[in-house]
Image 1 (cartoon, helix red, strand yellow):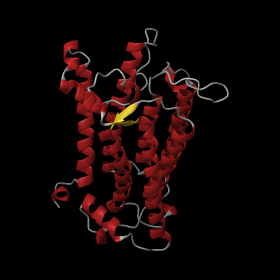
Image 2 (cartoon, helix red, strand yellow):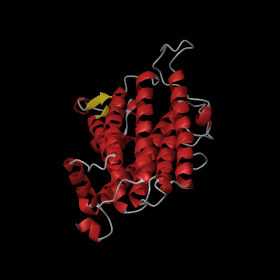
Image 3 (cartoon, rainbow, N blue to C red):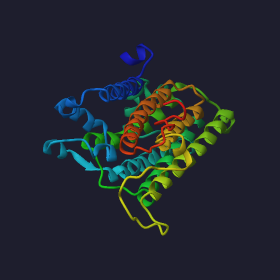
Length: 315
């Protein structure tokens, strides 16, 4: 295939394209904050902001009735994690079955991997320890986020664009396939347990710490709307405090980036494809965090000025 001949697979090109798209969106948003107010009512500006914003960052956007038709509830975020838990759990089960029972992947799955990597199925390797661990951690992450959405987070009547919703549904499907594409790197052969190394341990430790930070952040956000009994008292937005919020406006987004970095460590830092995924997450989460940070600083005069948007002391 063309991608393979130049050293890149289709999956590499896909993640590179998504990274560039969100980098451009981030830069465009930063530029738009310095435009004269008269441009805020232009159709192009409103359409752009409608596509990149969701939830509370979308509430003050002046949109006509046509754009409102494409709104879906932000609380549907749990659909993404439900899809991810089921799909990536299936891929994990198929990979374990491949190792323990020596049964090949289904034809439909090998066909998808062939298309994404450009490597024929007969040239693929047995699933490696790194791949299995990443699939497992990705499944654990998805399950935790699903439970948080269902039982901890308190969603208001915020909305997201239908395009964002469809993209989110497909995102975790492609993400799981991206993990399996690493099998075709041909690295780490040999007995499964003999492949265990310090990077697996370091990546696992970072994954746990980042997951704890994200969970703590979600709990603190939920407490802004609940009383001591846990009952919802308000859907209003308030200034979050405590934990990682003392340093950045969106520590849960920073934790998301750390989780993906931890998975790259589990891969031994050798997967170019996964580093492209990390790059995409960096730009995606930076954009979302900047939108939240801009809202906080404009809405609350007493908002702590030392807080960054996303990465402590940096961004």
